Image (cartoon, rainbow, N blue to C red; front, side, top):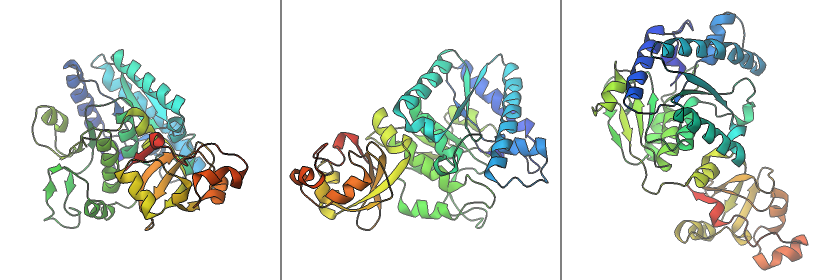
Length: 357
């Protein structure tokens, strides 16, 4: 849920919306539906407390805003949920938390424990300590990762528009609302790029990205929320918003972590033969198929695999550093040891550590 729903233009909280949202969640909780709430709004709330006329463009200033605003945001949630005798728990995550496999599993265990105790987790990015280069950047992406963490049955992305449109409805009133998406096409992704709103991080582009992550994880996604009583209508079986159908080839928890939980440190460009072997035959990546190495990375880092047209098609965990790979790219595996003086593995990336996107 983005700041555009929680906060008014003057950064005051929309108390009416928050109260209705909490009421709807309480009704769902009574039905035995477990809810994890991923909520923006901390930085906006911080601006309200510290004054909107000041310059907070610098990263440390934004982190200070988040520190102040997160307290006030959680205080409001506590007040509203207490009316329904529901406890809430604050969970602040950073991309670094999910990059480590142990931290990833710890975050999962914490969320599942909160749900088991009938506590509603309120999740946000830990903006106070997040490093700009490895931030989630938007809560749409964070919500998709959290949905995968808890093996959610559905991800609902609340927005200030009714759903995904054929064109930007703000520019073209005749744009049509798309009710169902079975496969996210390149055309849809390109159309979403033109719907961003100045001054806002989360736009339709980030929602499409989040939908790709979640559906690849086997989780259907609903985008919408402008209509009143959106959640009650949705869980009553009515057609609201845009439904993204989940993909049948659901990724395992570990594969989800490799594909989306890891911060990508570098890129490896492979030739056509290697790409074909990876896609069609589910082979491991060998050094003979590597054409180019981009950026610096170490053994065990997550990297992106690109084809010769620089299009990403896979991600994986590398057995060799960028420095080592520069020396062995294009050669047969039996020549690795003569070239380096040692050999870890025949493969650069084993198929068990590889995810096709």
